[in-house]
Length: 427
Image (cartoon, rainbow, N blue to C red; front, side, top):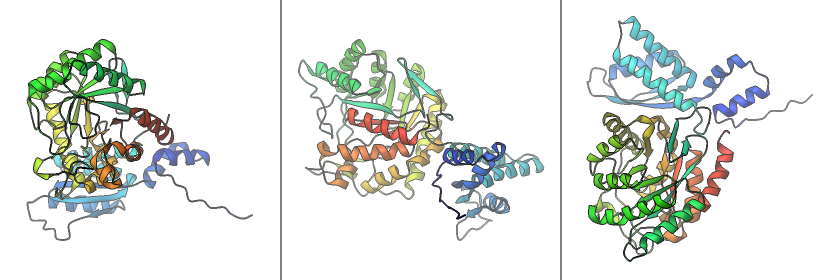
């Protein structure tokens, strides 16, 4: 009898577990087999050379590898970065070795802390980003439950601005601008949006800020009118504490801060006092880095990052820490990598490609790519012709772990998200 051999594309623990079940493998051993089959690469930053050498020795004993700087002086005090390379099984046992060594030496806070970080990272790494059995909790607003991991949630954009980069901004003058904004929002909900994001100041590269009074005049009448008509959750897209406070008082449910505290730290107090969810974004935008094109719009050029994902992750982690210190509940935090904000086209593509690395933060991920310049400059099309490019980024973003997407073209995105979810999520 001829043998038949297949190469299995078991990229996730869930898929490998399914194959083990199909062949009738021993149930009690499945977790170890899966852990031994999954190669993990973890980056460890800012450790002392002495600790790095110890970690190197311990992981090598488990059969893993540690990539160290080519020239490392163990007598130096300056911290270094390294890569831990091994299966999840090997890295899990490294955490055990660290704790054992800590006990043998009378308790070492540094070793225990590193073991805790390893365990936390490996737990997140092991969980498929869309596995409904291992979720990051549920956020409920206005009766809508955002059960992270079960499906992709869609945030519809309501731009109450005359100068939106995408061309969908609503003229903010005239007697009927509120009615038009409400009609637009109601259509987004009819098309399947789960939440509305109302903003009164353009965030396009190089845009000018508006006064608190002007922003209030734009968004407050719209939110008030919407709250009287719909029961859907409403997000206020602002970095101004006074605008956020007023919006929450008339019915907004979530604050979407594109500057992550940098513009007004008082926003933290407003969010903490009201107990509402908050979106934290990585944003290094500088007006001097914005370049304009009459056809394709504005973009950022000449921006440099020594380590893009490292910078984004570190910044978001620092924002999370400040939010927790301010008294904001962990379950109320959502992170946004800030695609398009202070990043070149190449940066945005890399960030989308490596979006899954942000899962290590342990919070839901909001992705905002809709009609943005990196799509236009990749496809050479103006903002009103970027639907297909946007949909491609949505599919890739969901596959890499996005929990919510912020978009203009809700109807198309809802369908694409539902189809993508059917492929990548476990129901």
